Length: 249
Length: 233
Image (cartoon, rainbow over all chains, first blue to last red):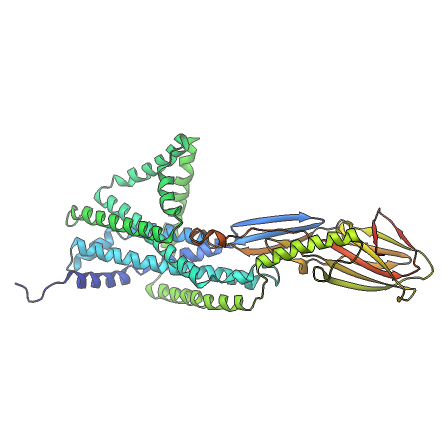
């Protein structure tokens, strides 16, 4: 009989708040990655050229697709690094179990993904504003489109956050597999490059099919459902996998 | 070839990891520094959003569909006007520059063109009895020059037009005019969820240039360089 009952959700909440402080550096890395991507975005994403009667017109196009891509890479790596031994060992100072640890990790990754989604869209505005301020008057072909309509802004935040959540989940699964067995450090990259090469040789692409399953979806509702279901399934799998691990290695 | 295709991504990953390890040793950010950077970064992002909406609200750009329709109509009207030997309707042409030039009266005036761009200019002449005998008025008109639904006619400067002796010279420096414009593309991860009709075609229209000359009724004109003058009745 205990004088105080331990509520799993209150413990998870406390762990989540602890991890927000302990893993604060991840947000610093997000900032650094996005600033780097912002700088690279000034190279443009495409161009259009027209030439006639002694006049040559070049239109250089810009978007924040590069920022989106860099942030997804950050999300994937963050999902892996959250499983580092130093972070897991620190949890042994708290009253916790594997379920609480995983739930707090998942909550942290979802929070980080939301932050990533919001900052991607806001940084897109910053990019356009920077270009507007540094470009001569009359040389911007669609000044009215410098601002995304509010509806598209919300769509962008939702899609970017879900995409980051998906990639961080994949990273978390990879990190968990590596914790199960160090052999996965070799097996996973070999599988990845093997599937890529198999596509080049046979024309059948498992990876491209997987990419199209998410990346080719044009319905926002279906995309959201696909991502949420994937998150639920994969996180449930990692919780089951972690329960099979030893108490401390 | 297969071996090389494995090498490149592995090499890139190794270079990246080496960079991260090297910079981590050189600079270990403290928590307070990180916090400060994040606060500044977040503030810039939050400020940018309302400013872009303010900037967008001050622009009065013509909708793309209207722009394209106008450019199409302007081109049609211009070609029809050339055929009918009249000045195109003012609704479809824009006056860019005007010259009032003096010449030595009672002598023929020769017209010549120098430069690549000037060769594409149409020249229309109308005799005006009201004009003094030693003066000609010239106006440079253009129809919309459009690229990706954007009228950039205001960026095109007209040729130089001047008189030396009895020679009217239409001149440009023969260096191609290079214009660099920028455009914003909707992000791919947003674009694919929007309806098809939100996509717009990238229309391009090459503008027609016209030099409209009002000359005294009895002025004799000579043309050089195989110039074709369009005489208004």
